[in-house]
Image (cartoon, rainbow, N blue to C red; front, side, top):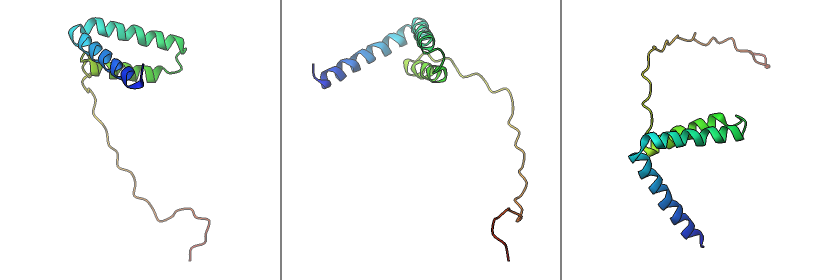
Length: 94
């Protein structure tokens, strides 16, 4: 099978998976959780952050992503002091 045919078959499979996920969001979420858990177990947590990120990406593309939690706090911006002209330098000023 040529590379082009393999890529075409993969594209068709991806589209079918996306449609399934949109029609059955709970089942798709469950399968995604299982796959992520399996991968995390097999890698012994070494790639936990990347797996979680990919899980969120897949959920977003599949249309069953959980809504973002609302922001409850406010950011506090503190002004930084103005830089002084007294910078350490190895060269004498003069």
